[in-house]
Length: 176
Image (cartoon, rainbow, N blue to C red; front, side, top):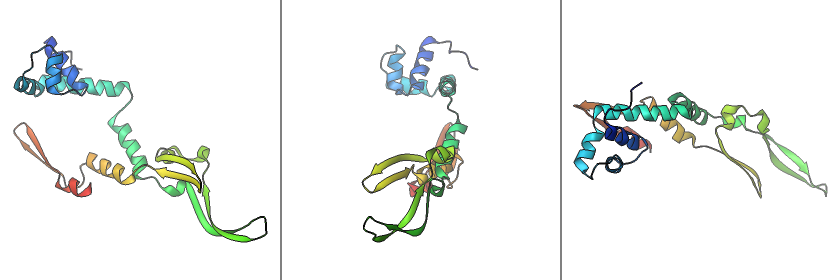
């Protein structure tokens, strides 16, 4: 683990950036006078960058968020199978009070207590409507795109040029 930065203003700057504030705002929060290029220069400073990463990873650890846990949730959504929550089958005849038969498609919901956690994690909404019950799953495609980006699929090319990383997102743009 990295200790706090020796320069107190740099430490305050890193903490402010780690909270998601802009470099300009963080520079002022740290006690400096407003200075755009100095704020940008300090935010690119290697010890400051490492300190920001450490603060953010500690914060994520504290709330139990890891890359693995996020990937696991995305996987549940991306690979959920609706037939694990709802089953439909052959049409069935239903007799009304007057003895009239109507044909309805048989649809049965799996009771929530019987749903595996990977299936219930993929469900975004269950609502009673005038026509019955609506079950909505989280966006499968978005979860799969996020997973694909995480594992570096979709032919994203990364070029290293000095200390600047340029990402060609041509393949990703086609997906969104």
